[in-house]
Image (cartoon, rainbow, N blue to C red; front, side, top):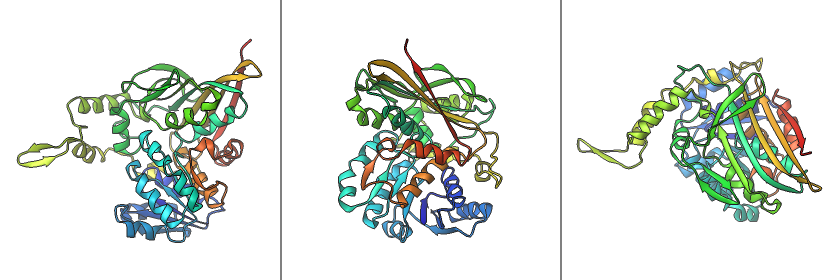
Length: 389
């Protein structure tokens, strides 16, 4: 089995490469990235004969198509802005596709490719990061056991870094978008926009996380779950996270930049030159990221100080009685789930386990089998069922 990882030298892509390399079902992993120097850092660190490196410019169709030759699946770990052209290339190459999410609006556009993918006999599963991804599958687990669904509430809890830690937790452009674009929620059966960093509530997670303040954020789960489970009468769905895994101080500094226009995409004239504030800010901020070797787990699979629990609460009815399912997927010593989850999806796609078409995770993947795959890498899911008396 050969898997091409576009953006495999990136912050999350390198973790997917590691997850694939460690899987006995995978024979070859192609790190397809424009930054071959960084790709070599990943390859040297993992030190596996399964890895090959290919320089790819996603904006160059010929280069992109070449990277897909002979691949049994494509795992797109590049920035979500390129999801649509990569999907077009995969469709043309007849290579199954998965990615880490399209930040609500991108996902909606990608789902429109369903009929074309189905007609060509090609399969795609979108939104397979840790979140989106895990919450979708958690919701599916409960939906399969409920007659109706009232609400789906998602809480992505990440162990807060030290207060003075000024590093980004993942791709800078994505974090800037999540900070500045209005979160969408499903409220009273309608999609509604809310202010960024609103809807705060304290939520209790499993140890070692404990109580963490959570806020709304734009995310793709809200784009698909209300549609997938429309027939079950869903009325409410939201996604909340704690400062995107960063320190509160880091987020406050970003807010100041946003308030002064440094995240604007509108060009301004500076001494006769046209400058886009957002592009400038992202270029400068991109230096504030953890090194790849800080993110990759050593061979013992005991990564650095890391803990994350993804919780989805699904409230509905069964046989006329109100029931709430709480599914919590916890990792505090296993593989980082944002890289592991799409790796599993890529393998399943390569094995032909998904029918042709373009699907959100909850419409394509079996929850129990997926949770068992996560358990192999010390990522465990706990199900709690509460019944109204």
